[in-house]
Length: 211
Image 1 (cartoon, rainbow, N blue to C red):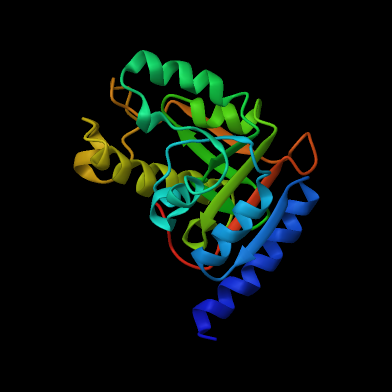
Image 2 (image 1 turned 180 degrees about the vertical axis):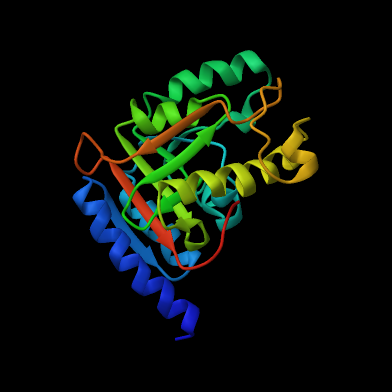
């Protein structure tokens, strides 16, 4: 085992124990293929599944894997109009399973997220019966403050470039605390506890995915 692999595995044990104290369930897998198998094992057949915008879900191949299963998928990429997407966002709140990543996860098991539309965070907070979070170990941070800095100065600037948003951070590469129309930093949520034990499952992967 390479030093980084051992480091990730050691760190994951601490995070998983911290998640347990917060009524969340944690898993660690060294590779995306192992992680995908676990996600599919967690999802009951014939369930309704939706997901939030996530490069991690794309990069791992999880979304393609879902299409091969006996599931009802609420997939916004299949919508043909903004109105259909808006309706799907509401339907997703009643899904059996909601998949997403997290912008950062702290060593003591808190989830740190900043969002634009807020549909992803709305589903994380309330609605879907089960939430499955898939996250690369590159998103692990020391604490809440480090998590917020990571989102504002790394994840958000890269995403504004990806989404072709006209924000200061898309040009200068770090947060400008802007109030422009294109800002994707509209809501900030720190998940420090799950009110319903076991509703949130966190799949840690010993590789780097997403922003």
